Image 1 (cartoon, rainbow, N blue to C red):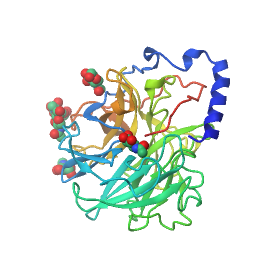
Image 2 (cartoon, rainbow, N blue to C red):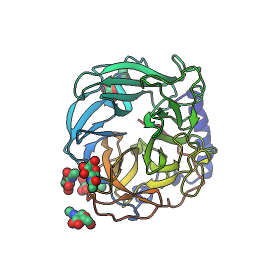
Image 3 (cartoon, helix red, strand yellow):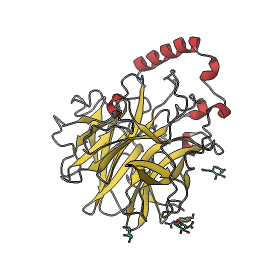
Length: 385
Ligand SMILES: *[C@@H]1O[C@H](CO)[C@@H](O)[C@H](O)[C@H]1NC(C)=O
Ligand SMILES: *[C@@H]1O[C@H](CO)[C@@H](O)[C@H](O)[C@H]1NC(C)=O
Ligand SMILES: *[C@@H]1O[C@H](CO)[C@@H](O)[C@H](O)[C@H]1NC(C)=O
Ligand SMILES: *[C@@H]1O[C@H](CO)[C@@H](O)[C@H](O)[C@H]1NC(C)=O
Ligand SMILES: *[C@@H]1O[C@H](CO)[C@@H](O)[C@H](O)[C@H]1NC(C)=O
């Protein structure tokens, strides 16, 4: 975290602490666990993971996660068992930022027989970040690290707008269904989530000196702005912009007020470039976002770091996957668990479904978060790993 930001936060914390009872800052578990049964429990993925990314290739699930050299796992079933088959990088990333052996939040896609893994190097609370990319033609064999395609804070191109105000973390990928143009979505906390077109080789930003960037989400009044981990999916005529909202990590050091922890939110648009609006018609640029999945049953806590696996028909529905903390297991970041649910669409809005039966639809209704409070801050490291 920048020292200046840190000192501002501490000053705010001190002034708020004077006005708010001490209890608000470090709640007892019974006060912070959301017990609603209006959301389905997570299907257990049976893997410890933070910011999971999953693709299907030849009917097998491949999972990528932040970790030493970006570990890769495979399974025939979303609920495991998962077998580690290797790593994306052979050693340190060629990008000299953050912890070069410990990338965050990878997103992998396959196009024309080549796999592209977009990964993040950063440090908690810092905007000195980069998104890098590595490729291979065979999962489980050697990857080539192509280094940074985007820098913020410092490094080549970091003086180009909007890299001057954003944070190059948490990349995700979407292709325009009609034109085939590819886009990289990224960002968090500093001016929230953005999208830039990729060049045809998918290894660089198109028109890197003047990228045609679009902002996807923004919290105009919040400081900091806890939106990150974007994903854009396509379903039946709409693009869906997903993100994680709230505090992601370090709950062992204290809990935020109920509802301030990570939740999974969405908006939609007919255009891949937006603007995206939520179910109430509020634009994501004006702080909108319909909650699709959040803490529930007193068991699932702070789900986020999500992705969506596209299904092909009613018997293979879309799958929403994410990490969450199981309140019976623990709150360390390393204890986060893989979870997933099939998605139904009601009036074109995604709703998570309980259970593992792909052909039995038992939709819940759109969920409304309880008790949004006027205290919009929680001081500590919100920043995603
Ligand atoms: C995955 O495993 C579960 C049991 O853990 C089973 O109920 C389910 O049918 C399996 N799904 C597939 C697609 O194999
Ligand atoms: C990078 O992260 C790994 C795993 O957390 C840790 O073991 C290693 O010491 C870190 N390296 C540096 C230079 O901080
Ligand atoms: C649904 O899609 C899956 C995967 O693409 C395919 O195997 C299956 O045959 C399809 N089912 C129907 C009814 O079209
Ligand atoms: C949470 O953990 C408990 C204890 O390990 C386990 O019995 C339960 O199935 C888990 N639930 C979920 C949703 O992870
Ligand atoms: C899954 O749902 C279908 C359709 O409702 C039902 O026929 C089938 O028995 C269910 N299977 C299981 C294992 O529950």
